[in-house]
Length: 387
Ligand SMILES: C[S@@+](CC[C@H](N)C(=O)[O-])C[C@H]1O[C@@H](n2cnc3c(N)ncnc32)[C@H](O)[C@@H]1O
Image (cartoon, rainbow, N blue to C red):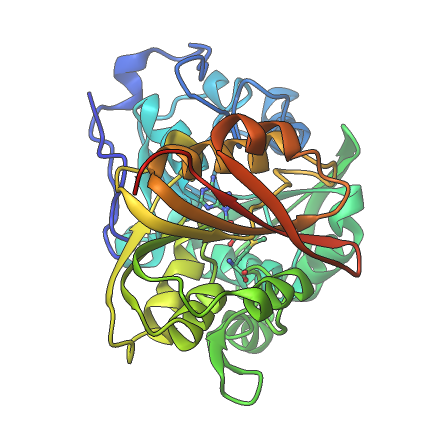
């Protein structure tokens, strides 16, 4: 079954092949994935730890419906019956991984809630504290009365704080440590702190930031500030960028807004962003733009389909975990080179230490460093050929 590569952020994506058809225990691979961002090809300690209480018999996999918030695919998940599993994932590469192997995936499970609640809610909370608190509160809200919520967090991504937060919402039924992660679980019961749960459900709500310049929310990139690297790039945008452009990894739309403000010849701009929560913000932040805009919930590493006069970007260089992943930025540069017309211009910013020079030289006719400041470099690269 083939699923569309680019789906509008507002569109919930559902894979309709049942997990049962795949066979329990099948090891999902992403060998066909041009670049595995969050992939079952990599080990996933938080996912392995999350499912350990079921594998070692501390908890029983229920017969009733199961919800997985911030779901990721992997071998550990494949050990269980998945026919009643619904996955929520707003990050496109991870959603694609889940869909590729036939799982049911939605961008926001709140609008697909099981009438009686879920017997089990699995959660992989993110590092950002407010977003994580909201996710734990949502997990309890979506669980059936008596249903179990199980969460797993890496120790170096706030596991201790996350476990403390869960204890404030509900009485813990158990916890364990494994793979440098903490796993903790609790039931939805009448003794839960429902007032705190209601409060935390609103913690990651969109709100105006930077004196109303943008609307943002906890958890998206640089959510309550202008990223210093992006600010440096925007300050160097030449006023003659013109025509149809693209913003790769557009986040909440800061760079796009700056391009539109500083470059009056821009007639159209396509925003590509993997995180649906960020893309929805960009849509709102740019609603008054005069240029024609298109918003793509999309994994840029799989390529983009347009042909552009210019591309702007502050490419990501992290996946899960804290280690640098310059392969991601390099892939963004390759995609930009392919998507540009001859003489098309790429404007990008990167941390100075990131090794992007060889891929820039391979994809472009001319490359120049426009500015270097505070550990960042702003680069303009022009594609070879006749305009
Ligand atoms: C360094 S941030 C820049 C955000 C925004 N352009 C700005 O300057 O504030 C990189 C962005 O790329 C997004 N991203 C990460 N991986 C992606 C992928 N594979 N495809 C598309 N976007 C991705 C992240 O969600 C993040 O919003």
